[in-house]
Image (cartoon, rainbow, N blue to C red; front, side, top):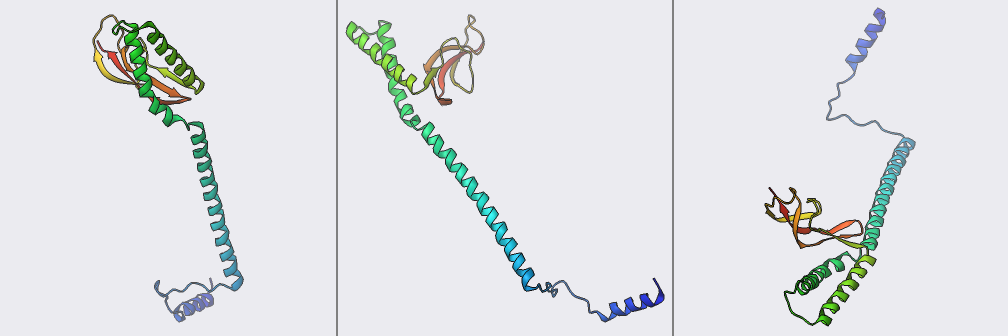
Length: 180
């Protein structure tokens, strides 16, 4: 830089008043710039609102489809204790623990077969049989016993069967597990 330019710059700096951060005023925008900024703000709000509504719609669609797909789950869950009682009665009758007329035994077997068919039509399957290996995602180990004739973590007895409804576990099986 030349000497004259330096002098002009220094005079310019001296004549300007320092602006503090507190009193600094924003630049005044022309009306067109202000309107452009306002339009950009409104467009941004619109896009965000549109995205939020799309997310809401997807959540509701998923929720409604879940209700339609698994709508009978609560009814089935409430029926399972009754089924367990009928099943226990059937086992007791077949083990000759209770002496009953043969027609009653056949009647209970008939009812159980109908219930099993009905549950099969609803896509409900039971699990948790003796001899299976313990799966913590499907079985609740209520007790452990030591039996040398069985493998470790093998189910020795079943308190209550577990049930799937479509692809969901609606009740875990309650079992006794072998631990050596």
